Image (cartoon, rainbow, N blue to C red; front, side):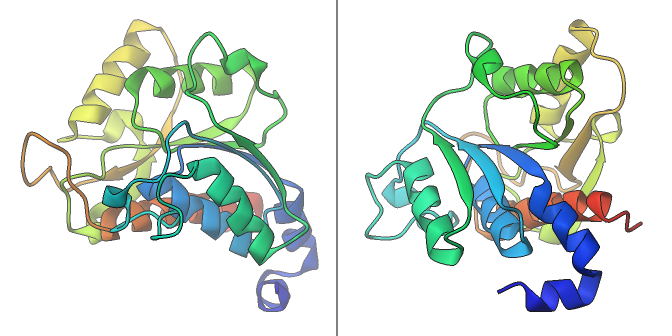
Length: 223
């Protein structure tokens, strides 16, 4: 399955990817693309957290969603998908909402955290958890109500603009005295409409893959 990856980056780099432990919070638009990209890239140890079940409205953009999975737990669907791709996957599927009351029940030895959740307080707790345990983290900012995926990039939270979610998170981070750089996946495109959050596959999909690309490049030290 991974022969062409090994030929591209070498067995030593591929083993570094194999050995990395990933915590993925959120398995929706951004998260499901990140999840599949992780598996197909050779990551073998993933903890995935999401409380939601698959809904009809998820069909347009979430890889866990199809007509057979509607009503099922997103993380259980994700676990089944992993085993269909690679039976050797170690998937810890946690059907839960992450809060400040339960975050410390998680293992402390992750190498990377992917924050693909849409709850502001959960994002804050993940950043705290990452800093307290010296874990690298990438947080996804708003991808809803956007259609130009070419505007998406990885940057520092302090360098974001025009994104209401990023603005709110910056304030929370400042209020909680969380110093240092916080890496985020951010769209330079401002939301094209206000009100209810709507989405196509392109922006969340590209964001999920871009986050995994950033992690891979960090592991194998590609600039």
